[in-house]
Amino acid sequence: MTRPNLNIVRRDVAVNAMHGASHHDQQRYKRAILYSEACETGDARLQSTLEQSRKLKAKFEAAKDRGQPFTRKRSRKRRGTRKDFGTTEGFNDSGILFGRSYASIAGARMEAKKAGFPDVMRHLTTIDLCIEPLTGNLETTTAIQRKIMRKRLVGFSSGCQIEGMFSYVIKPAGELAYTFPPDLWPDGFDPIQRPDELFAMFHWHGDISDPHLSKRQVRQIVKQAFPGSGRVCVRRVQPEREDKNGQRTHGGQGYLEYAAMDKTEIKVTKPEQIRKANVGYAMLGTTWSKRNRTFSMGKPLLESGTVIDPERVELLQMAERLETIKRNKHKGGYAEWFLHAWMSGVIKVVRKPSVWPQLGTSIGSRVLASLVLLRNWCNDESPDAPCFIELTDALLE
Image (cartoon, rainbow, N blue to C red):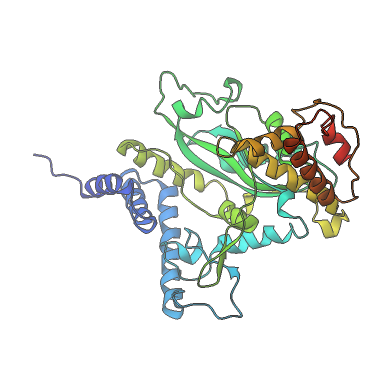
């Protein structure tokens, strides 16, 4: 009877336990998988990755001896500061909240370039760029995709500023085939005959800040530049949150911190796929550096000299509220849906009003006047009741 290989046994245990484990345990299981593969294959790149991990862990242990975890409430001076996330970066390689997160530093650096942009003019964007084989070179891929993005991301307003970072996630071919058109499939990609074969989906998380365009217009530009099914996602900035300890999360900087995190993303569940995905993820990671992950276009407002128009900010905020009403129309009543249909231009002509309302100069006074007119129109059933004809243009011109 053949004696079982202890490294293989440990690897299989780690693979089966990794799915659904905590972040700290996943890092430990990942190192066990890489160690067994390095012992079995003798691959120099895997051994180098493990050596770097050991060095980071030693630095972490040294930093842990000098520091303390954040378990107490913050003083008034430190309230409202950003939370230091326990990521897989730097001294936080083991997933414990000691030391400083590189994600927070990189996120703060990118957030500084967004100074002056209100949240309604910031459009958090994810773009699935290409399919990369697990034997590929991310440094070359990054250089190619950076040129493509600079060439295609055009049509934005003067003063637009783009900031973000590249990343990759391991997925099976059968799932990636629905996202990318066939002309973007790499050589050897066969989602029909080999749907379980693993590839890396190379993508970009970033913030497109435009001083004039709405979220719908930005989404349309990016979708035309990168066609495909669900290949582009543009979302709004979540309000910042502050917990009882005074630590602040979410907001635009929170998204940029997420983009900067050196996280392991593996979207598979089968044991053999988990093993191959961890090894492939580590091998790809040796082909680029953190300095090679950034992508930036445009200058900050202070350098470009672009001035934010307060009237335009109010218009974009109103359009965002109307999109929210449309998205949740099944939750609201008739009045909310009618208001959205009217302000969106769906209702064009009902009857011409006998007297136009006296409107103020600000957007707020125009909206209030329109709401008063809407209330009177709903309550007055006489033939001479005021009605609407192209009222949207009249109110907002």
